Image (cartoon, rainbow, N blue to C red; front, side, top):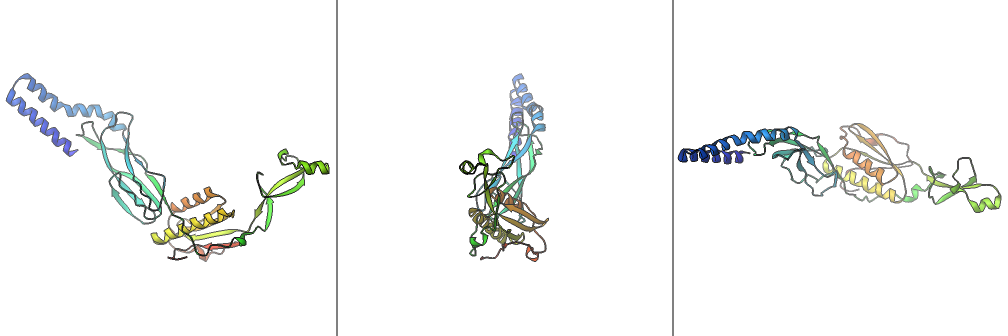
Length: 307
């Protein structure tokens, strides 16, 4: 804006010199138009300046180390006036807080949640000579997700052999089935017609699913950024490993707002649990290893350099 004001003053000075040297009515008109132009611009710009809003545009989620930028955009129902501003960043796990120019690379070296807000926003008139503080939209967040980090002592899948089979809620496909007499309310699609024809009574082929003991992954959400990268990277890998073998499990994590318990039976559950931990406050004291859980199998995830 300083540059535009300087150019305008040069133009105003030139119009004034033209008026002094030429002295005709045309020179007076040029001087009057030049002097009144900023006020006309301000008058025409006020509706847009009042309704203008600064917005931050960022991707919702990234992987650790992935490059991305945060853009500062303007929103206005009128023709968009000139604007400027900075971005204020805050990283949940590293404690990083800084102001940066728009379109700068985001700090994705470590996993966590980055909160990004517009700062020092100013909106100008159409000539860029006057400025007002710009209204700002709510801050945006970017989840920096960990990359899977394999562990050397992956669990033996034989430990998770089913102890029993129970009816599968909602029916559907299953590798195991149980034959039983028909009960009112059963779907006719589940009738075993060949056996029904042989026995003369309606027989249901009920899908069954395995019931295992509680499989538990635990961690304490505390440590350096590098340790947290390793903890959540190992949690990601172990979760994918168990799900690929059709083993449901539960994540229990000690965070700054207490113990979080997150059952996982699919990829969506796992991602939801990981995103929840990326947004959680760090635990200041205590360790989840001090708590005793009744689980058939439990794996504690640490942040050591090797695991």
